[in-house]
Amino acid sequence: TTGTSGSFQLILGFRKPCLIARRFAQVNGLDAGNAVIYEDNAGLAGAMVRAVAMTPESCRAMQQSLARMADSLYQQSRENLRRLIDG
Image 1 (cartoon, rainbow, N blue to C red):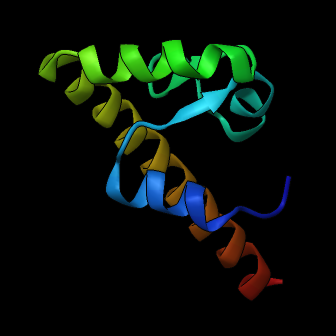
Image 2 (tube, rainbow, N blue to C red):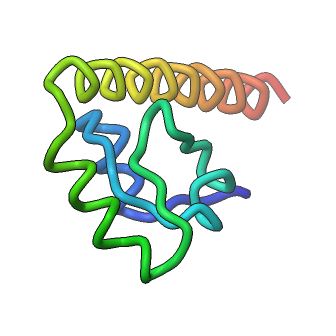
């Protein structure tokens, strides 16, 4: 709850939708609106097919959702830093 991986920083920084197992998606704030989610390793191949077949419009919508998420996290981080500085 207090850290992130380089992968998620890249996903948010570059606004690139990812393929992610459902069990990890919610914990990281990802959903069907900003990622391609699959149930388990057996579902990964199907998720890859869905990602390749995604329309440009769908991809842009996911990127916009990731941009909103990244902006929200940025604002939250700024507020946390402000509280630390102000004591």
